[in-house]
Structures are given as structure tokens and as C-alpha cells.
Image 1 (cartoon, rainbow, N blue to C red):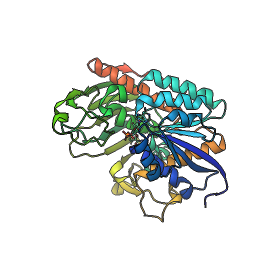
Image 2: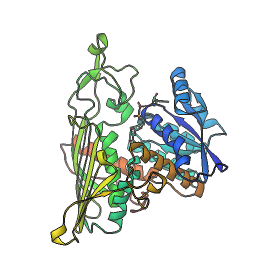
Image 3: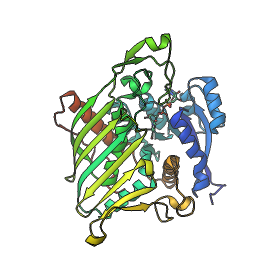
Image 4: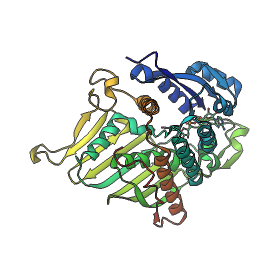
Length: 408
Ligand SMILES: NC(=O)c1ccc[n+]([C@@H]2O[C@H](COP(=O)([O-])OP(=O)(O)OC[C@H]3O[C@@H](n4cnc5c(N)ncnc54)[C@H](O)[C@@H]3O)[C@@H](O)[C@H]2O)c1
């Protein structure tokens, strides 16, 4: 059972919409599910609108609220800043928090540009020397089936990796009258489908294979170049404006879809697709890896399962096996329900908070580190540059020495 009299870990969170709600749920749950050396205390949440952030604080379980994130950073009774805002504010909030000696959890993608991400890595590196920890929120690493997939690759069950095939497909902006929310504006989001969902499959495949993407050839496409202005709508819930609002349009300055192929550092070749225009695909992420001894496939819509093909099976019995990843011996699953009782999307965030709290308490570095997230940022940048030059080959600037070693 959780240790109730352990030292508190006092959290302040910035942003309270989609990720803010998901993170709040994870912070509320983590000590109930896992026995941890620190007890999370949800001290305060920051937003920009007093009424809205006040309502969010009571709905999501935060003791206090403020309309200025700088107040959270300045408080002595907060140990960790959790950043759940769009990418344009990540660098400023994270570097201020780290400089103030606060641990930081920052949502993905780490930043909107490589330059910002590099600054964040420098800040995290300086803070690390003082025992302050930083982590980026690539939560899909912590879906038990994905962690198991990584473990199987690391144990050599797939042999030498030849192919990585990854797609992250959504369809929420198919309607040309869907408004110009922040995710469609380069100055707010950095990029479109590429940074929002492409970043996830880049991180996930680098994590699972232990290989870095070394070069890419890419194309991107913006299918709807102008959209109705959005007012104050948030990310995935813009609603469709009507009347005059629908007639005033602004430019979409990011990609609607990104498609690229890549080489990996240990010889594999890979294909990636990230789009918000895959009609009928709401939030479909699929990754398949083929190696010399076997293959493994993950589908987010069946996140408790892994498909495994073992080339060592007798030919008469060969075929893809469905592994139900709910055994207490599977990653993270001993904290949850009896065998066969499945878990969901939100559990990956509880696992993220678990690993972060554990790392802080034990004085170790959590993963994905800001360096790992910078490695993703270099890939996103290479993809954009390749797409800008008619899909010509672009080598990825390397974060090898800094990123977490394979299998960590
Ligand atoms: N890990 C995942 O699977 C996942 C999923 C969705 C979003 N994200 C990431 O989480 C971050 C937030 O995305 P979201 O979907 O929650 O967006 P959202 O629009 O739902 O919420 C953004 C929140 O940030 C607040 N905000 C915006 N600018 C601010 C500022 N300057 N100061 C204070 N508050 C500010 C907004 O008021 C809102 O509460 C992004 O980086 C996004 O890429 C990650």
C-alpha cells in the first residue's frame, strides 16, 4: 500500500485543458496505485482566465489556482512544475522553473524549435548537477505493451531489426470549417501533425528499437490553407463557428500531414506517416517492427495487446500470436487489476508520474530526458527541411552522446 506519511512532492501545474485534465488524473491516482517514496500534493494550477482556472482547480483536484505561472515558479512550497501548455510557452516556463530549482515535467514536443529545445537541455543539464530532474511527457513509452515491446527487442527476441513501420492517424480537422485553433498555427505549435503526433511515433520507435533516426526524406501537405478564426478555442475541441465568425478566415501555417522514410542508426529502414486527414481514423497509432528472428506489432486501439511472430516456432505452428499484456509480471501491471482486466489510455500517464516520482525520490534521471526529447526535435527539424526541399535527403543532427542509451 502507498506510504501515507512519506515526504510530500508538491506539484504546480500550468494549463488545465486536455493534458491538464489527464495529468491531474494521474497525479491524483499515482500514490493510490503505486507504493512510492514521495506523496504527491497537488498544490496549485495556473491558467490565464481566473474564472476558468478556478473552476478547473476544483474540478481537477488542485488546492489553489493563479492566473500567472510565474507565481508557481516563485513559490517555496512547490517542488515540481508540470507544463501542460502549447509548445510556444514550454521553453520559457521550463527554463524559469529549472533555474528556480524546481523539477520539471514538460509535455511533448519539448519545444517549437531546435534552438529552444537546446536551451532547455542546457537548463536541464545545469539543474541536474544540483539534483533537479527534468522529463518530457512522451507517455506512450509507458503503455505496458510498448514497454514490453522494447524489452523484447532489447532481449534479442526479434534479432536484427530490418523494418520499422509507424503511422499515427487522426481525422479531427477534415471539415474545412473547423476553426483555426492553436494546433494549426506555427507560432503556437511549431508544426502540425508532424510535431503533434509524428513526434510520438518518432520517440516511440527510437525508444523501442534503441536506434536513432539518422536521416530522412519527407513530404508534408496542408490540405486546407485557410480556416475560420477560432477565438479562444482550445486544441482538439474547436467546435465549428457559424455566422460572421465562419466568414473571417486566417492562414493555416502548419502541415496537415507529414510522410517520411528514414534510416536508423543500426541499419534498419523505416517509414512514418502522421496525418489529421485519415478519414475515419480518430486516434489510430500503429507500429510494426520486423527483425531477422521475428516481428512485433502494436495498435493503440488495442493497447492491452501485442502481436508477436516468433520465427523460432516450428513452421507448422508459425503465425502472429496475440499477447494479452495484463499479467502482474508485465511492466507496471502488478499495480492494477487481476489478470485479464484491461487498462486504458490514462494509465500511461499514471505510469509516467510513477517513474518521475521514483526518479526524484531516488536521485536518478527520469526518461525520456530533455536530451531524448531533443533527439526527437532534431528529427522533426530534418523532416521539415527535407519537405521544404522537395523531399531531398537530410541527415539528422545528432544527439547521440546526450540521449539516453538504448534500453534505458
Ligand atoms: N502526451 C500526449 O499524448 C499529448 C496529447 C495531447 C497534447 N499533448 C501536448 O500537451 C500540450 C498541451 O496540449 P493540450 O492538448 O492540453 O492543449 P489544450 O489547448 O487542451 O490546453 C492548453 C492549456 O494551456 C493553457 N495555456 C495556453 N497558453 C498558456 C500560457 N501562455 N500560459 C498559461 N496557460 C496557457 C490553456 O489555457 C489551456 O488550459 C502540448 O504541448 C501538446 O502537444 C500531449
